[in-house]
Amino acid sequence: MNDIRTDYSMHRDVLTRDVNALLTDVQALLRDVANEAGTEAAQAGTEVGMRLRELQGRLDMLRQTGMERVSQWANSTDQYAREHPWQCIGTAATVAAAVSAIVTLSLYRR
Image (cartoon, rainbow, N blue to C red):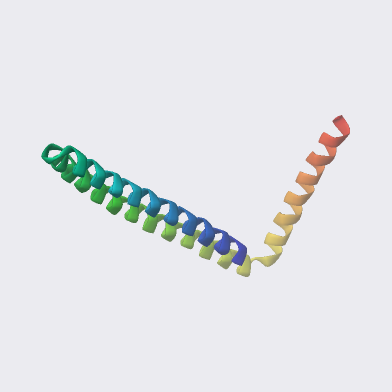
């Protein structure tokens, strides 16, 4: 279970870092465009800046919603596994047997 949370945390951190880098680049681009093009670009930059802030707000909301959903999923999975350990072991054994049968059949067909 900790592996799932660790993977989730790692992917979340990478996504957050990438999104923050993208937003920083967009903000720098807006500043550069505003400096070069004058007042018209400043007005356009203001509008784009407002849209960027809206995008940041929506992105934060989506990020929070995603974290809540994954956390709920991880908690419910952990709770189920603790309440039904033998069913989980049986399911894992069944999946392992099916995968090994498929791999064995594919190897013999070659």
